[in-house]
Image (tube, rainbow, N blue to C red; front, side, top):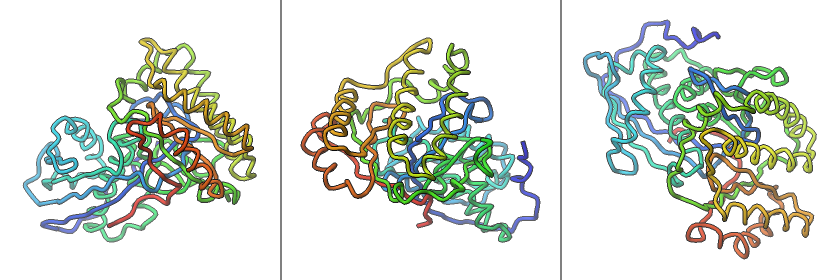
Length: 359
């Protein structure tokens, strides 16, 4: 794998201090990845919608100091110092320092906040790690002005992946592929790439309403779940199926076949959770209300000839996907029938977005 392209090869300018703020989104995978090898390489390719409203805003203040062997940082999440988050971020910095050695010359003060509940299955690690990666790349751009915008996004995706695989898909939008795939031009295991083909108008400005069934922290983290795929009896079959499904999804997105889209997206969601049910130790992240919502969506789709469908991430919350022209009716449906299955009747209205924003 050609990771040398991300090494710092030129002399860097001296800067005493700098501060950067980025807003980066979460994403929702249409074809899932579940299972990976080190260093953060997915066992199959995946494709996702980049979200717009579910995002992390991160500011990093960099202050020059004597060079050290380990990255030095303080981490504040929503105004409070979060010691429990630090080990994951410290490990991330250890993984990226080979490609960003300059971070060892700065004390970093990291301030982050989410527009959605943390650790509840809305890919908070994707938005969180991608925001840190963009701040680091802003510093690299400041001390090496020769970098192109294209390279910055590619390297940011590469860095973000070393912290959270799905974070590689949160730098750009509206549709991103991560993982080498023979049918996706330019695809790579090292970073996410924008879907390189023209998308059918039906899928433009697609809507995603996230029903907050359970805002609490998941009982089993995604990291543990991925690791359980290592000895999973159905792992190889699943990896092959996912890559085949990505071939199908590429064609669906280009041709606009809505029935096939619905079938494939829902099948992928249920397959992801089937892998959890059949691992050892086994676990269930869906809740009773998750199943209530799924059945209501199926009833609504049949009765109204709707294009509504659902997907799930690694959690209990339900992503309700549909084209923009159905938004008014589906919002009424959610208010009248689905919100009662949500924690305190809460849900997030979102849509497909374009990726990271410098603010």
